[in-house]
Length: 222
Image (cartoon, rainbow, N blue to C red; front, side, top):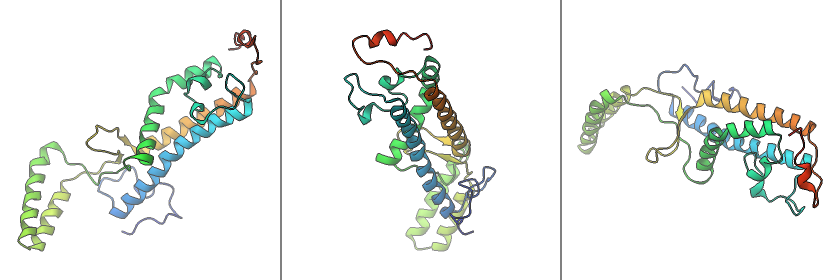
């Protein structure tokens, strides 16, 4: 089966359908991995852009009136959180684990270890047979019997069960997620945050700068 045409599929759901039980073709798995890496990068990018929209639309600045540094602009950054209404602050704080999840996948893909979809998983009960077939395959390869080698590898692969999971390092106790569910949940979460931020902008009341600015922070609408 050839890999799906990037110009014709509907994101990852057509390449690796959620109901697929057998391991996908290698090319389809690689294409899906590439798309998911791009996806997690853009989830973080969307959140950063939402934070910058708030900064520009409400003219958020540092205490001395200067422009905010890039490092201080983020929905969960303490300085920016203080400028939100209490209800929006509560919502953002309730998403602390989700923000960590997004950052973990994005930071790994961007700076350290590429994300990875395992070709299949082997059940614990099948592990001894899987290992035995592996040893037999190596022995066949060493004696130059490629037909036997291919047969042992095919039997190994037949023990595997595919699960639509993505992670990064298998030795770092890295987080993993079922990617079909995760992309939908992430999209809905970003969408909800964006619309609530629009309400924040509509209801925003600027805090006067100066020696009495602390009084304005006691606004009852907060």
